[in-house]
Image (cartoon, rainbow, N blue to C red; front, side, top):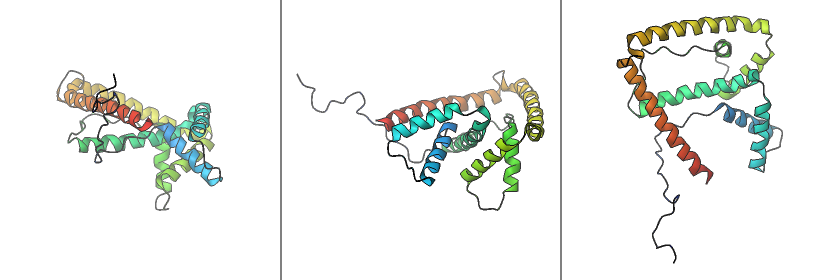
Length: 203
């Protein structure tokens, strides 16, 4: 006996996407993949087989050292902050303003200096990140020390500030903790929705 007319299969029902929902954050790997596509296009080797191209890019990504991945991870962290800010506005909620901000890494401190140096030169954001990454990789360990020292200082300040934050309610279930928990729960919901979106895109 055939399936009754009008019945829906397990994956027949599609979620209607909210066009006003902020674009989700791009991962470090996808920033790297975008660069691979750009470089291939410049070399006149635009990929014809997407699966093969992404497989090769994935292997290159795995082979990259942690230091070479930093520019892409920085771009991803930057985009994640953009996403979280836009989602807070989208949902009408705000992140606890009293919660200490995460400390910048050595590379982020370098990137801040680099942006100042390259200001008003009309360079695209992605191109600037690529150039900054190349310069960072070319720096000697001695040249990187000031940024690493500053990053360590900022990390200690953050840990101290977080300890104080928890004492004033961050860890005891006070207003700060409750607000932070709401935001975290919302982010978990977003992750679940994003997984569903991935399944839809793959079909």
